[in-house]
Image (cartoon, rainbow, N blue to C red; front, side, top):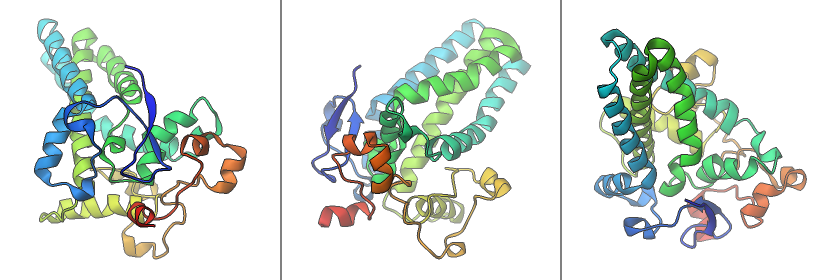
Length: 270
């Protein structure tokens, strides 16, 4: 399917997103701060990327069933995918998505805009929250298939791939829940949500995990809100300011010429 640029009229007019042609429930935009859990679940399972992950995970599972690895190799491959996922996400989130290098080339600026800049511009916009399939699938394959193959051949590689795809679905849903307009009753879930909301609305230079903040703690990027009293001026634009855009204009041009810095709902009111 071909991607195209489309202005979202119900959000800030200047912020455009790379979206696929919509059908059914996706004929309109969805904002998690205005949705119920039931609405999220319905939208989640009708989104093309989630459907693709589930179908491919099933296909990989069927392949592994007919080309079975040993029990040990299959188990180790699946466990590897589950354990490695938080580490891979942390590394990509911190050093790629927040690395401030993708906007410096016209070859990567559009991808960075779609997969992270737009998400920080409006963190609750559901279509932008979901990862772009053309970036997520290659990453999942590269991160799981070679290791699974080394562990136990093609069957184990299929197991690792299936586990990686299912972990992606799990992470995407947890990510959605964190942006949903509700306060979790469970303390551990409330704490997880608070840390991710701080990353989006207070200081983007920490709390890079989604469900697991162990590497944040180990590498010094973990913080509680009261530990950083001053709000980051770049929390919504990730450092891509008007000054930066003079040298690297591509993201600004694709965004309609305005680098938004305030809270998305306040920008809409203005």
